[in-house]
Image (cartoon, rainbow, N blue to C red; front, side, top):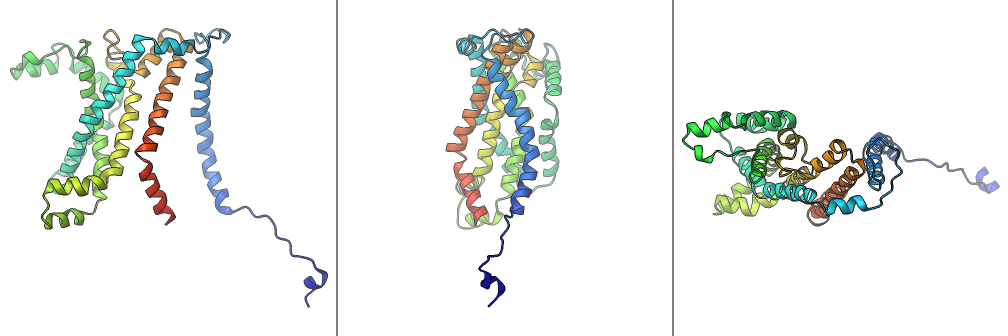
Amino acid sequence: MSATSATGARPRVGFRVPTKWVTISLFLLPALALYLLFVLVPVIQAAHYSLYKWNGLQPLDNFVGLRNYATALGSDTFRTAVSNNFLIIVLSLTLQIPFSLSLAVLLNRRFRGRTVFRVIFFLPYVLSEAITGVVFSLLLRPGALIDSGFSSLGLGGLIQDWLGDPGFVMITLFVIISWKYFGFHMILLLAGLQGIPREIEEAALIDGAGRWQAFRHITLPLLGPTLRVSVFLSMIGALQLFDMIWVMTKGGPLGASNTMAIAMFKAGFTNQQMGYGSALAVILFLFALVLALAYQRFVLQRDVEGAVTAFNG
């Protein structure tokens, strides 16, 4: 009989922290700290400031409750800004994404010079929004290059006051926004297309399917996860539009090109209404949050579930 059995003592088992969780925690802590400092804290501060009538300089002592939110929701200017954001979303989903998908499908084919075309189409995305705004502001001035080009082609009747007509300015801005961002969505969708084995489509063609049938019933469903991510990024980006529109129009003429971000900036930094501007910031945050959660719940859920299943398998 061993000594341990004779005395009845049990060997001590020390508490050991799994090394894997320690490593994960050490990697996550810096990112969580930055997220807390630069995302959550500003959101909480904005929600707090939105309950006051405050110009950003005086003491924070004029509590007005939800009055800033009521003013925002009853404001024609803010409603116009909201409608402009959703107009860009609708136009992006119906025009920009299909155009980007068409180019991605085209550039996924094998032909000489396709790499050059990919680079050319992606270049606008590399430019900063401020530079894009300045360049197009110069091009779209009355009598500038765009107007001269239409006149030289005998299309002078199509010339508009591109950035000065309240009824036309959003169409002009959408064209410029699409020119700036379609290359990003094209590259994203092109990467998704290149992840689809060519043998699947070739097998369908051998079985007698046409190219459109093969694309519709094979390529498009397999491209679904990438396409849904592209749509999500397009919607969130449309809600946050600011830089380029501010450089070109500052929300004008007559507030016709206001977006929620521009309305927020004007209220807080131009009109010195920091409390009201904070309320607009909170509303914009809630719009984006609800849209993201709804899209995650009803659209992206099966993609996430598939990824988790594949990981666990």
